[in-house]
Image (cartoon, rainbow, N blue to C red; front, side, top):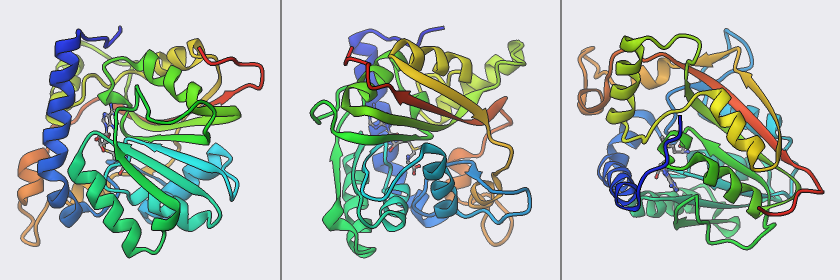
Length: 271
Ligand SMILES: C[S@@+](CC[C@H](N)C(=O)[O-])C[C@H]1O[C@@H](n2cnc3c(N)ncnc32)[C@H](O)[C@@H]1O
């Protein structure tokens, strides 16, 4: 199923996303820190949940080398971006988000952590990136592809800005296509509505879009993902829902956490 929307619906969807993140980002940071991801990737079942370690595991899976030019598409307030710049001290990174509040917070975070000389953050749409062709070695999408009204265009645009041999790395929440009865569909719709997503697609759909954009694709459901940090951030010291929890606690949705890694082969011409 495609999530392609009319121009008006697309503008309305972007406005919802912008409004949500402009309004809630300071609250999210206070409750959950600067990485806005519901699941954190872990090296083993008993490893602690650590946002920066999760980002580093994703970077290793994406084959990042120190000195690479990195794109963080849908960068939030910059938590993963800063973790990448700290892990790769010769790399540069450009982040884009729809939220002006987040772009300013990401700039402040990069300055606080001493990496701002290698970072830039802009308010921009990841379907129409303000960067030239072949500008990046790796393009990351951390928990943000479900916001796309046109996932096929998302992957085409990522391919355009990648150098030949460059990689797209998606770490995301996907609908669990293995089990989707009517109740599941309702729960997924409620999940998407709560987070202002257009539609969280399945991993198979993402793979099809990435392949259509010319990428050589490998996917994997993460063997170890922790969600306790995120769920715990919704509770106050008294065990009751705090402001973040009252806004975003939701019933179980049939999701899986998975990665998609796509390589732009040297022969691929920009679509
Ligand atoms: C759940 S947050 C994830 C933030 C960040 N990747 C992280 O891991 O902390 C989703 C992000 O996607 C961004 N986003 C959604 N649609 C976008 C679009 N079309 N272009 C750029 N950013 C977008 C939002 O502005 C928000 O920053």
